[in-house]
Length: 362
Length: 230
Ligand code: HEM
Ligand code: SF4
Image 1: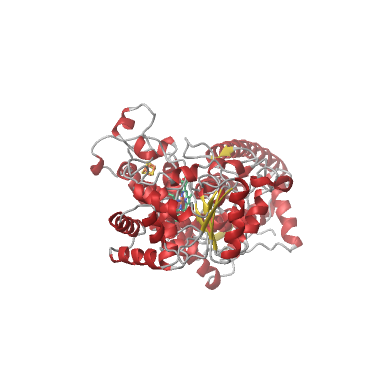
Image 2: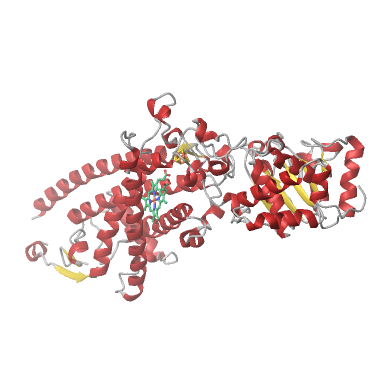
């Protein structure tokens, strides 16, 4: 690897990408970051002059859907850029090196780029039984994560696994899968949730860090604001049907064919922060709602444990008994209503009795 | 014995000042509107047809919910203000004399009266202890929860830069998935519904069976006592 002052641009050119494509990538990224056209030049400049930031991509307990998403970025170039950004250093899934050779790279980067590299984490560490449920390279992932985090500049939690825990952390969470921020507490962590997150969002975040040499603005939950500040519902193209009160009532009804709002089919768009309804997927072809299925809220904390994907009023698991607010409410109101009626009847009887005894006394 | 019945002494005290009475009825009306519209937000009316750009059914329901919500919230703030400047009954809603043994004894007495285990109720100018207990939890604390959760949800629609989100966004540190906050906001509605059933029943019953006026008091402000015994 050697001591590099290598820039991203150098790497990109070496991979045979033309300058023209490179400039296209810069404009595209500037746009997706919500920056003006002038910033395209700024991004280009940064990529040409600033030393490349090494990115180490670790895989914990996960399904690799983040990586799958990553290598299928909309613009083919984005993918190339991204791969140049990361694969050179370490990504045990897609790198050429394997085995001890691969693990050695980790060590090398850790010492050579102390305090400068970015640790991208896909998946999360299971903590139960000393972390034996995820053992890359023969050591518990949690140890590897902690070790590599020590000298990192920042951590990016790719996907819902790293950000929240995702399916392996769903109740009852048998392996005690734990999101990264609950294990590493002393490093800046950027959450890029989604199952998987959108490729453009991932590239955008990396490019931003490089260009501006700082972390993007994060929201209250630690997600980059430029991609996670609005809900799916806020930018959904079916929103006019929501406001009008035009809903799909069954999967095969006429309203479904007309493309009405999927709220009643359990769409979680109103409670989900992500960029799907604007950026879309697979070269901007579509996103779940566009293909006729509600949003399942895959980028939200604990989306597996918030009831059915197909109900709007969902089960509250925190309640002990699994039931919806409406079921609990109707049951309580009925019980109390019946009690009140019985009480009223009894009160009348008592009153009649008392009246009787009072007139006796007189 | 018989003299009591002949005199039928009626005395009265001024309990609820005008702002409290006005607040009570505005609050009641806004809660009814909030509960009905809120129910249909989570469980919308059957789908409508027609030209989408002519329709605003869900939009109207939500608009009414948010308008009533503002009235509810502003009214609540006004009510807090009145707790400071009003008469001594005005702050009863916000206090629970948790450490006063007498309070709990009387609360149990009141419960026994409702369980038909006491022949005659006691007299109270303000709320009886049982009522105060429920008022504190079901009206005071629950209103605060509904306002905090409601404005947090509202802030999501207004955007994370909005004042609503800035002020109430911390709710999402507790309810980390907004879906969860929706569910609890909805559960809050049901708690209120149950409270209303009990509250309306108790008010009517007390009005008839206890020794003081209840319903007319919230209209005129005067608590009438039906006898002059202690
Ligand atoms: C007595 C007080 C209130 C009651 C009974 C009530 C009831 C409800 C109910 C049942 C829902 C539907 C929840 C769901 O299933 O998703 C709801 C939603 C909502 N409420 Fe309230 N609410 C109250 C006060 C407020 C207040 C003070 C606000 C503040 C602005 C508010 C704002 C909202 C918002 C923003 C939603 C979500 C609307 C949407 O998702 O489209 N609510 N409310
Ligand atoms: S389909 Fe989902 S996200 Fe789109 S408007 Fe309807 S509820 Fe909102």
